[in-house]
Image (tube, rainbow, N blue to C red; front, side):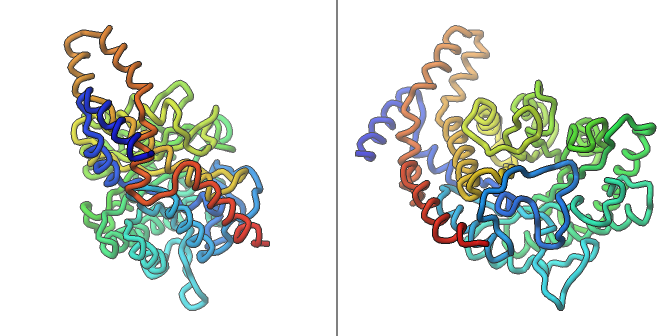
Length: 419
C-alpha cells in the first residue's frame, strides 16, 4: 500500500516539476549534528557541580545517562530511529578520562575523546565540537573569556586552544570537517558600568584562541551569540552584533545563529539569506524557543519549516549551511526528545526540497504575486506524508507508528532500571 501511495505522490509532485526520487537522494546526504547533551541534561563527565552559564534544564524524567557508556548506548538507540546522515555534536565537558589521564579543561587532549572517535567510526559519522565555558569552578563571578582577572581569562583561553587541537584531531580521525563553536554565557544580571571592556577582552581572547595552528578546511571555527540568560538578563558580552562583526572581520570564522538566542520578534529564517550574501559558510543551532531561549524540542513548526526553506532554496546553501540541533528537555523521555527533534528537521528539509523553488522564484520576479500565493497554499496539501514514508523505507528507519513503541520498550528495559 505504501509503495502505491508513494507512486501516486510521485506523479502529483511531477506535475509541478519536482522529482521526488532526486529529492530523497538529496535529503539522505544532508548532515545534521545531534547534540550529546540532551541525553544527560548537560551534566557532562568532568565535574559534579551545578549547570551554570545562564542556562537551565528543567524536569526530572527518569533514565538520564550517568556515564559515557550509558550516553553512547542512548545515542545509538536514538540514531537507529532516525533516517538520514548524522554527525555527533560534543561539548568538551564530555571528555572521557580515567585515573591515569585526568586533566583540567585547559589541558584536555585528543586522547580524552578517542572513545568518541571509535563510536563515530563505528557509525560512520563525523563529530562537531564545543569548548565548555560553563559549569566549572574556574568560572569566576560568572565570567570566563571576558574576565578582568587575567589568570582566569588565561585558563579559558588555553581551554579554547586545547579545543582547537582536539577539533582537528576529530576531523582527521573521522575524515569529516569539525565545526567548533565558541559560545560563552559571560554577562551581568544588572546594568553594567562598563560594556566595552568585557567585549574588548572577549575579542582578544578569541583572537588568541584562533592563533592556535589549525587547518581551516578541517576545523570550522564559529562564534555564537546570546541575547540574555538566567542571571545575565541585562548584558551579555557575546551579543548578536559582537559575534556577527567578529566573524565578518576575521577570515575563516563562521557566524553561528541559534534561533533561541534572539529577541522573540526576530526570525532567524529571515537572517540566513543576509548572511549567505557575505559568508561562504554559516552555522545554525536549531531549537524551539518558547518566550525565551528555553531549548524546547524541535517540532515541525512554522519557523523550523522557514529555516529549512532558506537552507534549501538559496544558491549552493545546502553545502554552505552547517546544521545542528540544540535543545535539552528533561521533562520527557530523552531518547524520544532526540528522535522527535531530528525527525522534525528532516521533515522540514523534505518539505523544502519538495517545493518547486525555481518556479516560485520566477513568479516573484515576474511580480505575479497572486499566482505565487495560490501556489504556496496549494503546496501545503500535497501528499508530503507519503513521500516521508518512502524516505523512512529507503533509510530502513521505523515508521511513524512504530518508533515510539521501540522507545517505550527501551525505557522499560533500560532507562527505568537506572537508579
